[in-house]
Length: 120
Image (tube, rainbow, N blue to C red; front, side):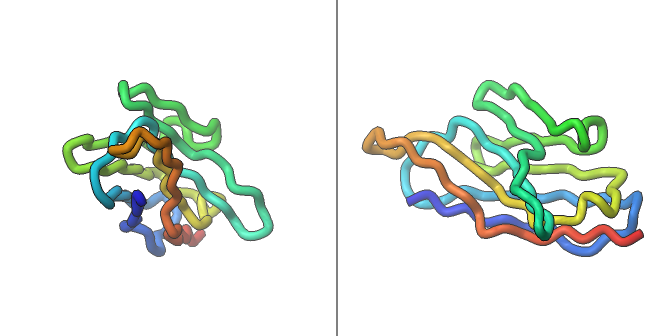
């Protein structure tokens, strides 16, 4: 089973930056797409950014130009660089990864979530 561990969250002032990391582990597997989602209190979980195995990226309109998603395939890691943070970026951020296990089974895994709080 693929296990995801997020890090890099915390409290930051408006206009500040944070970099989230998510490492995948748990045996032999191939990762396809990687992404970051977020969920604010009383809100639905939403896609923030995603990156395919080929490196194509997409972003939510609300973070375009401020956030950058990247990945290091050798480290099974996806990053989210968040700049010019706003109070409305405050949420629990979740890493999401899909791919194939060594036995050819598709997996779709979520991290446990990491809190990002932006103070005004």
